[in-house]
Image (tube, rainbow, N blue to C red):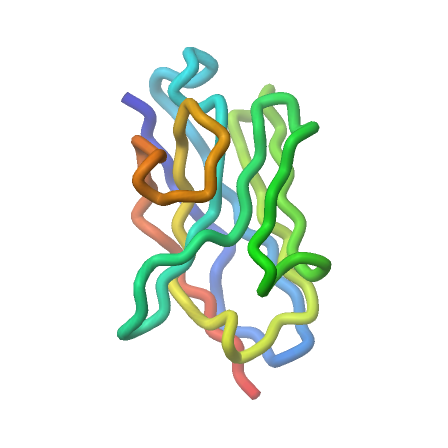
Length: 124
């Protein structure tokens, strides 16, 4: 099992920045967390892909809605993945979830472990 705990969410004005963190524990570096992803879910909407990163950090992928504004990174020595969010918009408001999986993918169903989520609210 891999446990994931997100932090860093909060309230920010449009145009501002936040950095989310996801701390992994348990069976890390065993293949279960080869790929780390961020997803988000707004009220009344389905959970959607935001960004993902491979183990080495060389492979990343972003949704069209955040590409150029968000940056995903990871520090394996700290078992931590980050999501730097810049130029935030009100439509970025959602609960952000960290996920761990073994395959590089954008589908939520391919990720095995999930955090509890952290709320990000962007005011206009």
